[in-house]
Every structure is written in C-alpha cells, then in structure tokens.
Image (cartoon, rainbow, N blue to C red; front, side, top):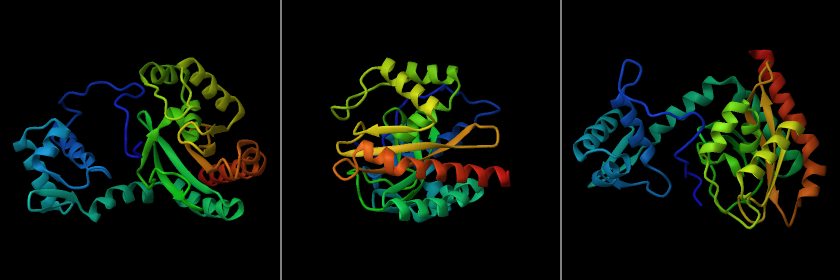
Length: 270
C-alpha cells in the first residue's frame, strides 16, 4: 500500500466548475504538481497528461510554466519536481502556530516513550502527515511530511473523523470504500461507525494491526479553544514489542497529556 495513495471521495465533495470563484487553469496546475509521487517521481509529458486528464498541449504549458518558476525541472523527455516545491508546504507549517508548539512536545514524548510520534490533519477522506518524530522504522510504508493515508483505518483518522459533525460523518461513511488491508481491518461501515463513536466518547483511539500487520497505534485529538478537533497526535509501535494493552497502559496517559499541552499552548496564542 502506498503512503501517497488517496481516495477519490470525501465528505461533502462536489464537482467544481469554472466561474468567478474557481480558476480552472490554477486547479490544473495543482493537479500536475500532485501527479508526481514516490511511485512516479519522473514522468514524460504524455504520462503527466494522462494522469491529470489533460491534453498534451495543456500539460506542456503547465509544465513549462512550473519549470520557468523553478518548481519543475526537465531532463530529456522526463519531468520531475525540484526542492523548491517544499516552499509550498513550508508556508503552511510556518504560518500555523500549532506546529511550532507541537514539535518540541512531540520530541519530548518520543524521548520518554521510545515510540514514534506523528501529527496529522484531515484532508478530504485522508489524513495528511504534518509532523513526524520517528523513534525507529516501524512501518513498511515510507511516511514523511505530506504523506497521506486513508482516515478510516488509522488511529489519527478515526480521532479526526470523531471530531466531525454527525452530518459530516454520515457523508464520509456514505462515500468511503472499505477494503481489507490486514486480517484485522474493519470490514463493515456499521462497525466502523461504532469504532469512530467509541473514539469520540473516550477521547482517544487504538488501532491494532488494521493498517499493517504488526503495527499498533494510539491517537488523541488536539483541540482549539472551542473544543473543535484541529489535528490528531499519535504514538505507534510494533505489536511484538508493545502489544495493545501495554501501549494503553504505558503510552496513553503520556499521549493524552501531550495532546492537552499542545491544545493549551495553541489556545493561549490564539
């Protein structure tokens, strides 16, 4: 499974059309940027056009514009992104005080628990990793900033889904497509709703090998001053070293404390 895979449906998504509030050429430019991934880091013009549903001429204009601006480079027939593209993500991270407060708290959490720690937000039907402090490599999936995973089968995703309104959650459940990732992955929408509601009630979520065999993950919400869930914080480890009961006993109190600390810092500065 790819960390960059995304679902094509999400809560309250609608078909957008050109108009006063929607610039189609800009949207197409973003689609070209998003066409590049770990699976396809270098592509020909034809491949980009096919991935984005564009004509070759349209894809060429966008790629040449991005190349002129320094976001894309070409070598022969192949195009690829440049490091300058990181400016776009850094602008988000640097403009949000939440992540400035979160990183040192996460580093202390990893030092205390000796488990990897991540923070993510909900974007469409996926979670997007915005901070990560690894203790060691525990997943076969290569996760970095900007990596995406399906919300429904991750601990942070279920915490974030638990923060949606009832109508938003219903829209998500209506649209989501479940698929077996391991023998323990939730298999029905009814059971998924139960597990999301449990996360909402108890204020945290445990995932036991639903995303990947051997991976156990625990997540808690980060909230604003109104109690709205803004992001999720998690710790994750290997089942054979930290089974679910041990993770809850050893990690949950410290995780909840860290999430509350980040929430308080955010509320003081907002």
